[in-house]
Length: 115
Length: 113
Image (tube, rainbow over all chains, first blue to last red):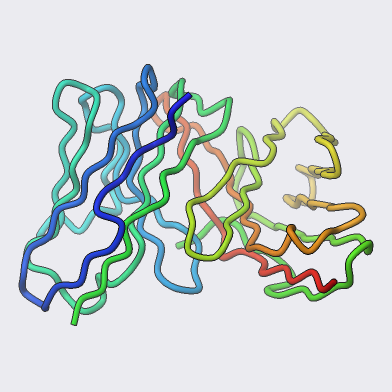
């Protein structure tokens, strides 16, 4: 089966600019996650969707980050305006069930550098 | 804040040796998962162990879970240079009917030929 697709692979922007990341999960996977991974750290959950509804966005900096999952399939994560500390890899993952009982499938991530 | 803490932070071994990584966590969990990440790549799911299980095997991987001590270990037997990667434990907790997965900081494993 096809994996989780993410684009772009790399992005370099200046601080205060905006940026958007795209994710296409595995077909049929109802649950979609966005994680932020800062260099040398483990991934941190930003937002979790069940179909097109948000079930957890407690760690999302809502003053600058936004995410949507229209039609319960693809998802976009946006940062506006970006700060230097937003430099990280943004990982998208999906799982078949909301229990996560079969593990998560991750995409290759988007590496964001804010200068 | 991160739920799980891996130990050691870094591990360097020779090919053929066994590698053991430990994970400790703080609150009750539904399951615990181990993931592998090669440099610059996404995470790959290795194994999931449920809170009512004590040990699980998958190929050269062996995972144990001790819920009384809130700890887990990942053993890779007969390591190979290709096992060089970062390994993360992630604790799964049910919240509001959904599984929430929280990752630790990871163990960086280097296997030398």
